[in-house]
Length: 575
Image (cartoon, rainbow, N blue to C red; front, top):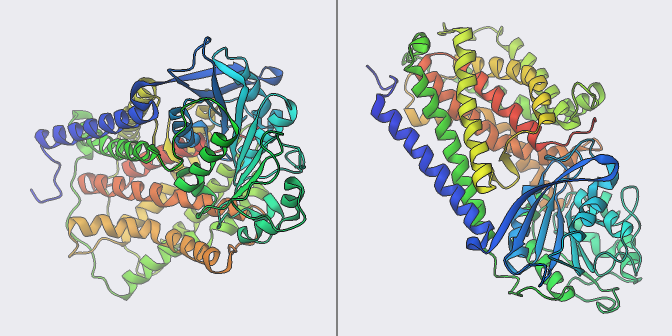
């Protein structure tokens, strides 16, 4: 048997043991950090909001917060496309300093009822719930929101003018059409944290680039000045509630989630404006260990999928799938390089145009309720059609695969089901998902599960076509095992990576993204997700192809994973 043969029982057990070790150790580390070693309790809460909308949040309760000794508190709200866990690093640092933290799912996000944007993003309901807790000092509440979450907390401030003491807008703003206008007295004790490369300077503050935010007349109005705002300078009076400060940390809009400077700015402002708690230096931060732990668990999740698939291959029903791919292929000639170049660049070149077509053709509806998932699906289907057409170009290889449709369907479902059970178990035991940055796998709500079933079919079409082409065209005779994996990762991700290099290279050098349509800045950020996701797809697909000589099980597993990932990470705009 050659080096493409299925591993023996000992190897499979070793892979599954490694997966368990990575998942449990990473999840425990993340849990230990976010609970401050047991001094902070985390509760998964649900409560009824305006009009009976069910709202979801994670509640961080320091041990010092009791009805006899109420603690200061912070309402923390994520931005568009994210969920309550995205504010986890902020919540960890606030809770370490003795603040109760309510990390809220906006309406239409995470486990809060759709549609997105309803009830002023859910911000007023979140503040009302936080103020209802008997262990919260109602005279010492801060509001913190990132991006669209900033609009949620500004709306909360407007709904309850005496219900909070200070507010931090991370990459966000006051003002219409989504929030009340800022004035020298509203919101109370305002800090604006706007990163130097933030992609949304125009929509937030009406300036061409983030470097010009100090000159925003909208910001001047909120700060009560007619001169450029000086970062780090205190305007107004904290005691009078008119305190104002601008922070301009390095980084981009999505990097605020994992920026020590951005998180430190929030800590600094609340320690200036709220009383109580246990003040610590803003530089004293432990959240990177939580990110490391969830990344380790995410790696373990991928290893678990591989080990589960290999274990299932030993079941008699799936024996027909176990056919190691032959060591064969072509030389890396000019046609091979051309195929690689076309295959990796076309998806990147079409990304913004196809997303825009999706926004025109597939607005959110009861059947397809997520606007940006609809755009991704449109991109996937149209690229699948392009790849399908290229399969008939002269000289394209058409090898014989070991295709067993129903066995492939069943083994894919079983493999991903095991992975889903692991995610759900870790969520239940540790209040942890499998993530790095804002890229995460977590259990689905009922609403998301229904959407998942609908989005699964177009994603399956794309991955069946794309991975069949990948394993038809790119195998070479001299490739090593490592080379096979690297080549396939490059084939699926290089074009998108170059697209992002161009976009962010332009942002660094000219302070502008190279975009065309209204929502393109959001789409560029969405494209960041493609790099880790398609890398995982390449690894899983290559692993399975080597053991089955079939693209089909890997394509179906990839479709299940990507559809799952998309629905839990995107906003649901349709009720």
